[in-house]
Structure formats: structure tokens, C-alpha cells
Length: 533
Ligand code: HEM
Image 1 (tube, rainbow, N blue to C red):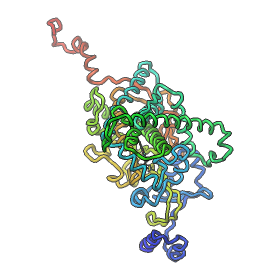
Image 2 (image 1 turned 120 degrees about the vertical axis):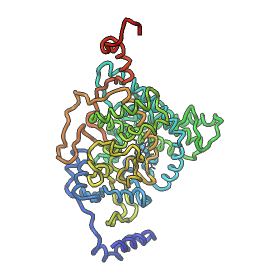
Image 3 (image 1 turned 30 degrees about the vertical axis):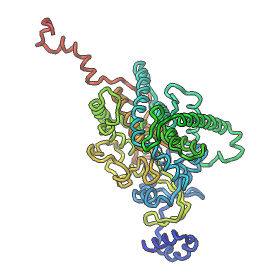
Image 4 (image 1 turned 90 degrees about the horizontal axis):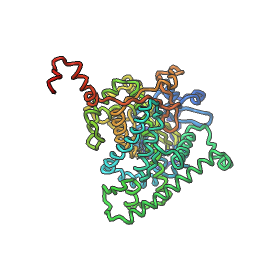
């Protein structure tokens, strides 16, 4: 029955309205068209836990594509690698960001993540060149300095014997990094909480709440003006926008005064930021669009990296053998140095640990699309206007696609094999999405998390704090045992923070120095101590 569908598709692309095609192909629809499996009456489960968990159980029951209906609304849930590839890559022009763009409009406007069509094409073409090799290499020292500040903070906690909440510290680490990297602004959020930092968090929480809210309360006109919370959100947005406008002005002046010629790998050493590159490139863009893009990158590059670090340290705390293997690699590759670009390739096992962490905790756990035209998903015809969730969580944990899918096993990725990505894993592994809308910060983020993990485990051991909330087994007896509990907004958060006990490591080299006098006196009876050394 493939031919009638391709014929119908072809005719539809020629611009024949779908009503006429429906009529012409009615015989076929009635006789041969398979129906997408439909899951009904499952909504209650969705309110009580992160929504991707019931979607996982439904996937096991209904398969790689099914329809989820809530009253008048319905969504297609996709958990099949070849359908995901079709939507994200092979026929990506037939899909938009749909609901995601609607939810994020208040903060990102027409920035690169929500934008579609021509706006997206033009902005993507302007922004991608800014993240060139030389830029990413320069960022490595920024990652090192920022992580070093976090290490100093942890040093103090380790001395005082105080537990630390790592999730919020990772969020601050990646905020400090992305502010410098995108618009040369030092949030210094590891030491400073007020003003702009608080505003960024207000806006982020709002974006996350809106993305899981059952009804769009913020669209109610009067609500916007009287709700204290919505007022706080507009105040925060105003502060951030004002700051961004100031930074754009400052940067414009710098660009006007500098002698540097613009070229492909252009970078101002004093200010290597993406904003500086864009302005120097003569990027012809309204200041509203520029602000939208900066805001988009601020958010895209902040919570995602923080969530990857949070779940990596959670997983490491469960697997001390992996942690000590990791520490061995970091000791031998880095010693006490700051990481450099050359080290990125050498920290192979560290990279595998992060690959595996992003498999088990993909950020975000679902990708959102809307069909712009009629299409075929696998053997099923779909109409334009369908809202689609591609569950990366399901792809990454499918028992059909992975051996011991729920096990944290960095060894599943051979050290001498290629770095896993969506292409060499045939779309069963999508840590940064795929196709034309793939993450523009993938290399940036990979190095950022590598540097942070390497520098932290070299200096400290991390354990779940004894006073941490008790662990819960999955109350729905599904195949996933959730340890520290999860909650979602755009990324996967912990419900009560990642409370850890941090202790300073005694590295072998350090330990040997400390033990030296002891060895001389006690252990070796053949050394004659009275005869000098
Ligand atoms: C898009 C993940 C870090 C900027 C995406 C997408 C994913 C993703 C899955 C695709 C979304 C979709 O198809 O709907 C991640 C993860 C990160 C990370 C896991 C950290 C570990 C960053 C950083 C930046 C960034 C550091 C900025 C420097 C973007 C942008 C897009 C994007 C602008 C939209 C691209 C487009 O639509 O053309 N990211 N990201 N991301 N990411 Fe990232």
C-alpha cells in the first residue's frame, strides 16, 4: 500500500488541497490505511509524576508511535528511531516548533529555538559561524576558571564538613559561563544572588511552569496585570532586556573602535563573546531580534548543561568504580594543570561517562514539533497541524534498542570507537537532537561538561549526603527505578536538590608525600636511620 501514499504525498506537494485528496483517496483510506494506536484515559497518571514516565509505560504498551488524547486535544508520541529521523532530518521542512514556540514566545520572542521558516534560516546562518573552532578553544580556559571558582567554594564546604546542594551550584556555574560566552557579562552567580541573577531565575521558572501547565493562564488578559507573579515576571524581563540592550551598546562601541579585520575565525581576545562576533560581522539585524537570540542562547546553554552535570554526579555517586576509573584518567591526563584543547580528545573515558549520562537523562527529555503538511510517519498517514512529541527518553531507554537500557554503563561505548551521535547511532541516541535544528552548542557543551567533570573529580570525592531525602522506588512498578526523584520543566530536575557530601581527595602523589616520614621510621627495617639518608 506504499504507492498510493507516495502518490498522495506527491500530489499534496504539488499544492492540491487535502480535502480533494481525501475525496480521491477515500477508497484507499477506508480499505488500507492503518490507524495509529490510540491511548485514551491515561491523563490522571500524567499529573502525578514527570510526564515522560507515563509516556514510557504507554510506549511499552502501544509501540513506537501512538496517539494520546485528552478531551479535544491530541498528541502523537514518537519513540521510533526511523520516524524520529524522518521528522527531524529527512522531511524536517514539513515540521515547525509548534507549541514550544507558543510557550517560549514571552521570553525568547523569535530567537533561534522557537523561530521557524525564514527567520530561523537567516538567524541560524548568522549564528553558527560565531561558534567556530577558535572560539570554542578559547572557551576552554573560561570553563576552567569558572570551575576553579566552584572548586574553591567546595573546598570551603569540605573543610567545614558541610553538605552542598550540587544542582543549584551547577546551575550557577553554567550561568556564569554562558553569560561570559554569549555576551561578555559576568553574572558571578556563584557569589551573588540579587538583581539580574534573580531575574534570570524568575524568567526560567516561569518558562518551565508554562511548559507543564495544563491551561495557558498567562494568556488571560486581566490576569497578566493583576497576578503578582506575572508582574514579577514582567519586571524581571524588563531588567534583563535593559541589561542586554546596554551590553549590545557597549559591544557596538568596542567594535567601532577596534582595528581588527573581520574574517572567518574572527575573535576579539578581550571579548570573545558570540555577541561581539555577530556585531563585528556586520550582522544586519534588529536589536529586538538580536536580544531574542542572546536570550535564547542564555537559556539554551544554561539549564541543559547544568542538568547534564547534575545527573552525571548523581550517577557517579551510585557507581564508585566508574568514579575511580574516571579519577585515574584525569590524574594521568591532567595532573594538576588546567585543561587545554588537546586534553579534550585524551579524556576519553570522561567523555564516555558524559555520553552515558546524556543517554539516561536526556535534556530536554522530549522534542516538540507540529506538522505543517500532511505526511507519512512509518506506515501511518498524518494530517497537517498534528502536535508531536518525540520522546528522547523513550529512545534512549528502549529495551528494544539497548542492552540493559536502564544501566549506567559507560563501558557500552568503546574507548577507541567514534564519539556517539545521532548519525552513527541511527537516531536511537539524540543528546543534541538531529537534522537542521540540531543544537548549535554541542561542541561547546561537550567541552564545558568535560572540563567541569574532570576538574571536580580530580579534587573531590562526591557522595549522596546521609541527610538527603530517602530514596523511593518507582511507585508504579514500571521497569525504571527512580532514585533521586525527578521533576520536569524544560530539563529534568531533582525534586529536592542533589545534596552531596564532598571530601577532598588525597591523590596518590599527595598521599605518597604525606606518607614518606612514616615509611622511613616504621615500615622498612633495613633502612639505617642513623646513617644519614
Ligand atoms: C538546540 C540540547 C547546550 C544552543 C538544542 C536541541 C537539543 C539541545 C536537544 C534540539 C532541540 C530541538 O530539536 O527541538 C543541548 C544540551 C546541551 C546544550 C543537552 C548541554 C549539554 C547548548 C549551548 C548552547 C545551545 C551551550 C549555546 C551556546 C542551542 C540553540 C538551539 C539548540 C540555539 C536551537 C538550534 C536551532 O533550532 O536551529 N540543544 N544543548 N545549546 N541549542 Fe542546545
